[in-house]
Amino acid sequence: MKKELPVWLWGTIVGVIIFVLGLVDWLTGFELNFFVFYFLPVSLAAWFLNLSASMIVAILCSMVWIGADFLSGHMYSSHLYAVWNTMVRLVSFLAIGGTMSWIRYLLDRERQTADSLRRALSEIKVLEAFIPICAQCKRIRDEDGNWQQLEVYIGQHSNIQFSHGYCPECAKKAMAEAGLIDKKAAP
Image (cartoon, rainbow, N blue to C red):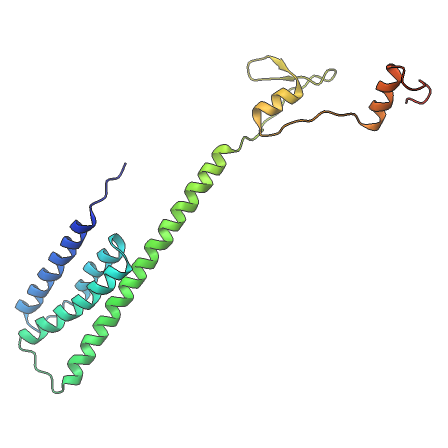
């Protein structure tokens, strides 16, 4: 059985990764771009926490990136460029978080469907192979060599239940043998 880490531990792991990325981003300056590495904490939050957590982490990653960019001394000719860059990163982080969350949802749903299908298949008994049957009494020889009534054998190897009755010809014949009708009327 697979043991999963608690939610608080995943939150801590994600927080540490964001902190380390922000620190590296700040120390290397604005000339080296670590933008794509911020996808990791967003993806982890989406996969192991939930969609809301990944959205919060995406916003936090955008704020850490702009903070590292600002603290590293990057000067833009217009503040609109800084806002634009931050918004582009925010949208991409949100898209990654949403996509990873959706993939996780689909995977969980597929696993549930597969489990229910496995349970349903385990309940189904299927008759497969040639069945040796007596030409006279219609008994069936089982795997152990014992001869069983047709109804018993099929009932043991499938979910079929039998009800007994008479076809019209056999009903007339049985009634004639019992003396309830004239034997000439029976086939």
